[in-house]
Amino acid sequence: MSAACRWSAPAIVALACGLVAAGGLHAWAAPFTYKAAGDLKSGSGTGLKTSKNYLPGIRFPIEKAPAYLNSQVYMPGGMYGGGGGQCSSANYNYPWRDNYCEKRSWKMPLCPSGKGHQGQDMRPASCKDNTWWTVAAEAGTITSIGSYSVYLKGKSGTTHRYLHMQMSALAIKKGQKVSKGQKLGRVSNDFGGTSTTIHLHYDVQQYVSGVGTVFVSPYNGLVAAYKALIGQVPTCNASACAAKSKCAAWGACGGFSNACDETGTRKRTCTKWTCAGSKCSSSSKTESQGCKVDTDGKVLQGWGPWQACVGIAGPCDMNGQQGRQQVVCKAGKAAKQVDMRPCARKTEGQVVQDWGPWGPCTAAGNNCQGVHERTQKVCSAGEAVDKVQTEACPAACDTSAGSADGHGADVADTDDVEPVADSAADARRHPVADGISGGDVGADPMALQQVGAAPSAGCNGGGQPSSSWPLLLLTVLVMLALRRAGV
Ligand SMILES: [Zn+2]
Image (tube, rainbow, N blue to C red; front, side):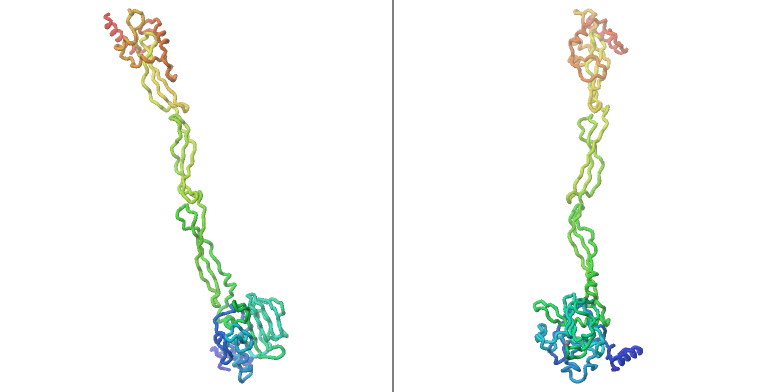
C-alpha cells in the first residue's frame, strides 16, 4: 500500500497515506492512467475501439475523485474475477478499463458482436457503501425511477441511466429538473432485491443515424470528464465558449472604381470560439460582402466662379444671365451641374455706333450760313437711340445781285465754287436740328423752296448769329463769284 503513496513532499505523503489508512483509500494520489476505449480485460469480450466522444462537456457522474472504471464481473469480487473480494485493491486502482460491450446478452447494435454490456461500471473512491454521491452529468429532467435505476433525460437529448444507487435515499424524484452536477443519490449495490458489487453502472442512449436510439460508448466522454474533475485539463463549457464568438462591425464600404461608384465591398473579422478538447480556443476569419453607398449629390468639384453675363438681347440690353458650374455625382457617375442667375450690366451712354459723317449743310433761303448735323447711336435706358449733333456750317448762297429771277444761284450751278458743299447736299435737306432730336427727317423740297424764295437781305442776312470765320469765308466766295461774273 505504501508504494501507492507517491507524493514527494513528506507532509503530503504523511497526509495522503494517513487518509489511505483511515479511509481505506488506495493510491488516490496516483497519476491518472487509463486504457483506450475498446481495450477490454482479456477474456471479457470484444470492445468497441473508438476515439469518438459521445458526451462532450459532461460532468463526471460521481461527485468526487478518485473513481475507478473497471469490470464488476471480470475483476475480484466478480463472477469471473478469480480470487479476492470486491474491495480488493486491484479494483481501486488505475489504469481504467472500458467495459462497454463486455460479454452480456443485451442486444447492442454498436458492439462488434452485436451483444454486450450497455455501459460503464465504475467504483467510487472507496469500497464503502452508501457514501459517495453521484451527480447529474448534464442538466435535464428525471424521467423515470425504477427499482435500481434512475433515468435522466439531458438537454442534449442524451438519456443517462444511473444504476445500483441506494434507492431508498435518492436526492431526487421523478419529474424533477436537475442542474448539471446536482446530487442524485449515493453509490450502492441495489439490484432489485438481489445485490451486486458496490458500484455505479452508468450508460447513455443516443440517436445514431442509420441505427436508431441505442446505447453508445460512454468511455471517452468519461475520461475527458474525469480529467476535468481532477484538474488535469481545464474544463471547457461548450455553450459558454461558443457564446464568446462574435464578429466585429463591418468596415467601411470600399473598393470603388471611381469617386461616384455606388457599389463596393466591405469586410469584417469574425472570431469563432469552440472547445478544442477541454480548452476554449478561437479562430478568426475575414468575411466580405457587397455593399452600397449613395453618392448622389456628392461634390467632386465645387462651384466655379460666375461666368460672363450672357443672353443679352442687344448691345444696350442691361439684363442677362450668368452661370457657374460644379461637378457632382449623379446615379453613380460624375455630372456637371449648372446654376444660373440674372445679371445686369451698365450700358447707359455706351456708344453703339460712332458718329457718322456730317450731313449736308442747309440754310434757309439764300442764307450763306446753314447748319449740318451728324448722328451717333448710344444706349439709353437699355435702348439704342440716336444722338444728333448740330453745327453751323457755310451754306451755298448766290451773291449775284443781278440774277434774272432774283433768286440765289442754283445750288447745282455753284458746285465748282462751293468748296464746302457736301456731295450729298443735293440729295437731302435737313431742317434745323435742335441737337437732340433723333432720326432723319425726310427732305422737304417745298419747304426749302419756300424758305429759299423768301426775300433775303444778303448772304449774311437771316439775323443768325455768326462767328468771324464764316464771314471771312463768305467774303472770299463773293469775290470769286464777282470775278467769274466779270464784274
Ligand atoms: Zn454494469
